[in-house]
Amino acid sequence: MPPQSLEQIAQNLVARGKGILAADESNATMSKRLEAVGVEPNEHTRRAYRSAMFSSEGIEEYISGVILFDETIRQKMDNGTPIPEYLISKGIIPGIKVDTGAKPLSWHEGETVTEGLDGLRSRCEEYYRMGARFAKWRAVIKISGDLPSTAAISVNAHALARYAAICQEQGIVPIIEPEVLMAGHHGLDQCASITSRILKAVYSECKIQAVNLRGTILKPNMVLPGSEAGKADAKSVARATSDVLKEMVPKEVAGVAFLSGGQSDVDATSHLNETNLTIGDAPWPLTFSFGRALLADALSLWSKSDIEGAQAKLRHRSKMNALAAMGAWSSDLEV
Image 1 (cartoon, helix red, strand yellow):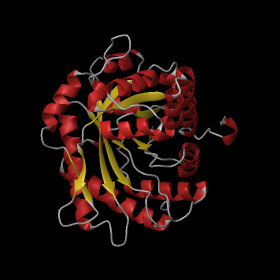
Image 2: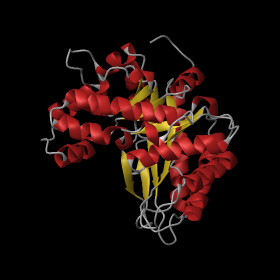
Image 3: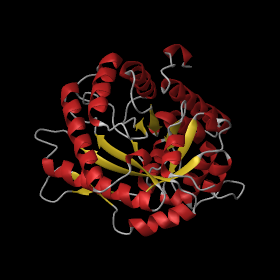
């Protein structure tokens, strides 16, 4: 891959009509998903599944980058080609999850801080040599009672900014992912308020730590009511999400690639489409960085040895979300 600036890589990742495939589930999480569809979880089945998904014909029309897990970036396709090298050959940028998970936050019951800063510089050096040109770090924010605490927001924002600075130092574009979880009874307004707080804290820390925002991508939650609070209509979600982003996300940021956060496939697509139609003249593109919302149905088909069907399903969902990223999706296009 020829050398490119952080800004060029970030712009390529959020190119019009393209989004990012999040295939960075940890071994434990991926094993649970394989077990759920009746497949024995091990290194071989994880590799076989991901190899089948990455070789889906034509996904490069809709997918700009793929986030990998440490095990996966070291694996090979069925033909022996290293996975990062194969993705690059398709015009897809390899990325890598670099955090080591959310751990309990001391003296703050029910809250977490994402770890993984120790040794991050050397890991980024290795991942860069392997072909990775962007990375992801996920902070988890929970709404419940008086939570989140100021402490949880502060430590996670600080860690996200430190991660971003280290990645950029090593030539890697950081995806900044502060996720306000859907789980809970909270309403749309409370989600909007908490999302605003965490974004304000994150960008304050990024400024302090001299992060080049033009070489970053934000991966936020959409503003949604809690999963126990009942659904909001797509227009309400789009308005609330647009308002928060326009107020809190600096214009220098290269792009916004939403996480799906446990929404159904079609809900995630519908909300992405409606937000693009609602936000108007935004300084950054809105696209997707979905995992389950792209892969859930494909995994089910793959588990039944329907490889072509699984690949077709991934291609379809990728196309639907690529259209939604341009505000051009319609439910009539779903099959």
